Structures are given as structure tokens and as C-alpha cells.
Length: 311
Ligand code: UDP
Image (cartoon, rainbow, N blue to C red; front, side, top):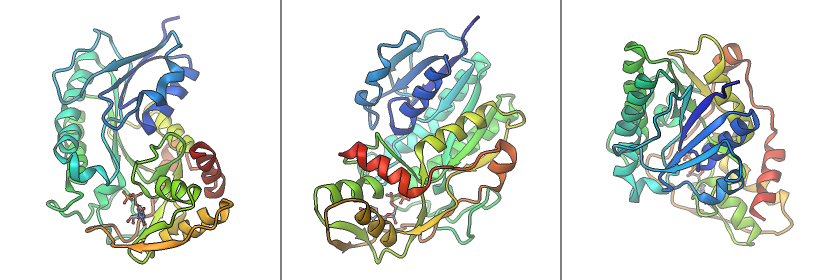
């Protein structure tokens, strides 16, 4: 039987590499396409021996040269996503999510591929509505330090929507904070920071007073959601949040991580970055209804697995 062929731009990244694992497990032929900007060969090295796994180095912003294949599915996961990168890689990020998305949608149109654009909870900005459902338009600063990411994801959504109107079978998934093994040690996001700090017995750096909240989803749950969003019937043209609906204050996250390791690191307070969203919690009513999906991994369990990885 002919195997389904899937293209994963961003496939060497944190989420992308876990998705490639799952697709290979499902016995599909997987083409991982990555510029290795934030993605890492290390994340996919165990896949290189698989006959159905193909790595192609390239950049979705360029006129890329992919083998002439009728991809059944394209999961667009290509973009740096850590706020740490918003300063030094701002133009790259802005163009990856806009021009890069357009380039991939052209490919989807040409090859008649199903398409999934990974957007983000950042499109809600510093939300005035809580929790955030898909109807909310967001509160975003178009010129702020996060705008290279949040505004380009918003434009990516707009471009995707307009390709949908032109016949492409695409869906938009807004990913909320996700964590787990294969985040880079120096990723800069809060869970890899706290976990590596705690393991090194260094102070945990809480930004601001730590009362800001996030809702953290374990990577395996997220990957299952992405696959369902691509495969379930009637997801064409849909916008769906995927993430956790269990909110936690950053200071409580620091305390929790401290309690899960043997060391006794201090907690220090540093300046809160500009435009850091105050609250964030996914409303996942739609994902539950449309995809029969909700995250299953409890935060303690997911953190333990993440701690094991960083050890
Ligand atoms: N944060 C923190 N200490 C760190 C890294 C991040 O207190 O070492 C805070 C950050 O200010 C934000 C939250 O943790 O309020 C989540 O930050 P992250 O960069 O992980 O993701 P974001 O949700 O901001 O994209």
C-alpha cells in the first residue's frame, strides 16, 4: 500500500521532532524540513536510521528546493518561538511566519496537500478576556518587543485564511505554552530555565513578582492534538486552541519545580520584560468538542519527565 507522505517544516525543533516521531510510529513517510535555526540535529538523530525519515535542510523563506512529491499533509511548525529570540532574530521570525507561510501554502495548493498552520496564544497578546477562546481578537502591541512573533503569527493566520478561501484545505491551531523533553537548555523559556537552574543549584529567576500566570501543556498531549486537528473531519477552515486550561502563577511554578528536585535553590526576582502577558489560560471547549481532545498529563508528571531529560 502507498504510504502517506507528510512534510514537517520545523521538524527538527522541539515540537516538530516529537511530531516526526509520532508520524514515523504511524508508519508514514516523513520529510523533515528545517533550517536548523532553533531546531537541532540532536532532536532527530534517532530517526535518521529509519528508511521513511528524510531530513532536508532549507529555509521556508527562500525559494526552496524540495523533491517533487505530492505531500498528503503539511504540518507547518517552522518558527522560533522563544521570547529570548525576539530580539536577535526578529526579522527572521517575522518573515518565517508571513512569507514562509505563504510559500508553504503555495506548495499546499500546488500539491493539493492538507495544511496545518501552528499559530499561538500570543495572538491574544496581553488578554483582556480570560480564559481566551477562539472568538477573542486579542490585545497586541504592533510595535512592541514581541511583535515580530505575535503580529507575524496573526498575519500568518490571515494569509492561511485567504488561501482557505482559495480552496486550500487548511486549519489554524493556536498553541499555548508547551513544555517537555528536547527543549534546549538555553531555550530561555520558563520551564527549561527553572529546571536547569534548579538542577545546577542556581537561583530560579522569577521575572516580575511572579503573579503572572500561564497554563502549561505537556508535549505528548500537544502532538496528539495536532494530529487530530489535521485528520478529524470538518476541521477545514477552523481555528482551534490547543493547550492546558490549568492556570498557575509563575512563582508557584518555581516552588513546584523546587519541590521536585533534591537541591534547595533560592528564588530571585528580576525585571519583568516589557509587554509580558499578565494572564493566560486556554479555553479548550472547541478542541474538546471538535477533536475529542484534552490534555491528559498532569503538570507534576510532565515536569518529572522534563527534569529527567535535563539531567
Ligand atoms: N519567566 C520567568 N523566568 C524565566 C523565564 C520566564 O519568570 O527565567 C516568565 C516570563 O516573564 C513569563 C512566563 O515566565 O511571564 C512565561 O515565559 P516564557 O518565556 O516561558 O513564555 P511566554 O508565555 O512568555 O511566551
